[in-house]
Amino acid sequence: MNIEIPELYQEVILGHGKNPRNQRRLNPCTHTYEGFNPLCGDRVTVYLVVEQDIIQDISFEGAGCVISMASASLMTELLKGKKLAWAKEVLKSFYHSVTQDFESLSKEEKEALGEKLLMLGNVQKYPMRVKCATLVWHAVEEALGFKQNEENPYATF
Amino acid sequence: MASSIFPITTIRQDFPILHKPVHGKPLIYLDNAATTQKPKKVIEALVAFYEQSNANIHRGVHALSECSTQKYEAAREKVRAWVHAKSTDEIIFTKGTTEALNLVAESWARPQLHKGDEILLTEMEHHSNIVPWQFVCQKTGAVLKVVPVNNQGELVWEEFLKRLGRRTKIVAVTHVSNTLGTVNPIASIVKKAKEVGAVVVVDGAQAVAHIPVDVQTLGCDFYAFSGHKMYGPTGIGVLYGKAEHLERMEPYQGGGDMIRSVTFDKTEYAPPPFKFEAGTPPISGAVALGAAMETLSQIGLEAIASHEHSLLDYATQKLREEKGLSIIGQAKEKGGIISFVCEGVHPHDIGTLLDEEGIAIRAGHHCTMPLMKRLGVPGTARISFALYNTKEEIDALVEGLHKVRKVFSIPS
Image (cartoon, rainbow over all chains, first blue to last red; front, side, top):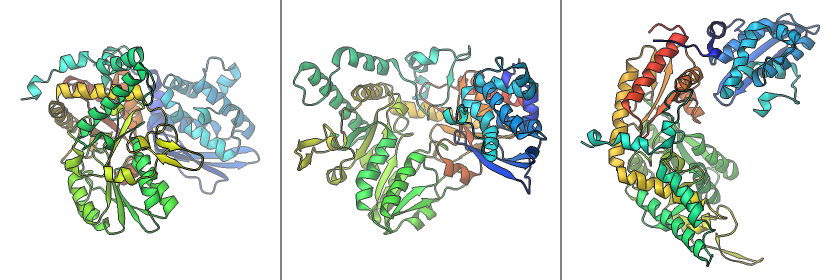
């Protein structure tokens, strides 16, 4: 049988989705939030340890589809060790990449997200699945208290 | 045998959307429990109504108003005949099952229930047969009681009897589970409920297009269903209610058409069913629902039921052969609905990957979150059949599932 793999289900995404990194509880942590996707009932909880404006550690708990798990895995890898201000900017870029297009991101924004997360941008071709990709990002946003009301696709979509 | 002469080719030709490719592939539509596709006769009835008969109903003295009133009321008679109600006065048009259930909750239950009264539901109810009752509880102090399901997805009869008592005022139960396909023994439930004087409200959304329904034989007090799940348009639904209840019930909404006379001091209501149909109803929707019922009658509901049952048997057998796949809900009595989970693949990923093949299924909690919790799954993949589905489509589904396994590198 000829198998055409849809763009969304690339090996990188499947790899992270099936074996997500940083999937554990952080105790103690400084910030936590449980994200809920009412479309499918999936729940993902994020844990962060933030010291001196730096995300020293970050993890998540919960089960979900391969898209939400890959997104959580890649996000935790990306944000660990980064400054809060940097995280805030990268969140914006990620939302832009999954709801608008990743081509229009600047070179710096693309580099900040990295190739693997940009690949998740393919989710925009599957509008019903965008929330799967944004679930964990939304949870981090809530946990850190910098919810971006201006352009939060999670709220509007 | 009805099944051997079931005119599947002719039937499929009658549904235009079935011939529209999806992702460049022939559409295989297995999401009929969410909504069914529409035959030409229904689409044409909508067009013909607006081209030839459109006017507001009742009170109009001009020709078009008489024509639309006649068509609207003729549709009510078709609905009456479909569920075998005694009188058209017992048939209320609503916008769907949800509104019909809310109507019973608001107009029958809320004014009558008191603190300590009980509303008995089942663990397999759709949110639309849970939330309106929670509203009633919040407003009256009544409490919800829930009949559990067993691992096969059937109601546990002894537990039902245990929870049914003199405090039970309402038993609200689905005829056919939208998630599991379980067919509940409504007549037996009604018989027991009557012994304690409880009123029985049936969610018939998944039943009316698939199995014969006779509200008088069932003996239920209320029976709710949607037009769009029985090949009719969206925005039209039905509440059957026994005349004795409807006469005593408070109106649901106030407005035009539901009154006999209005002064600023006092308003007298119209008799049922009009008392419950405030404002301009979905006239074209009712007319087109009538057309859907005509189409089903011409094919024959018995023949349809038998066809869908053979699809259910075939699909159940095929899916049982799939490694790592578990069917959720294996009741003895089932309608054409199968929920399943696959080891290592989330239902949403199954749904997206099958969609790439032109196969439409549903994935998630199916608006039955408490049932998902009971069964210990976050969600399921669900296929549901209609009269136009074929065994070849089930074969294609199985092929599609093999592809899902390949993408996820799960050995077959």
